[in-house]
Length: 79
Image (cartoon, rainbow, N blue to C red; front, top):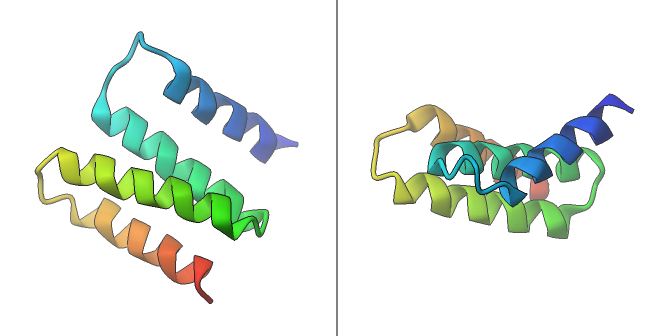
């Protein structure tokens, strides 16, 4: 289905060395976290959310939208 295709492309971003953008990788990690939340694979989801948060923190910017999104994902994992 379409969400499986999206997950495939997010993984491609993570595998690619062509775009070594931390922000792009953080977004892909967060999106994969959301994908696994939807599939109720919470252990995997948490791993991706953790990695996304770490990547966003490495950017050293005040990205409150992404921080809030990761907090929402984490709340869904622990519902």
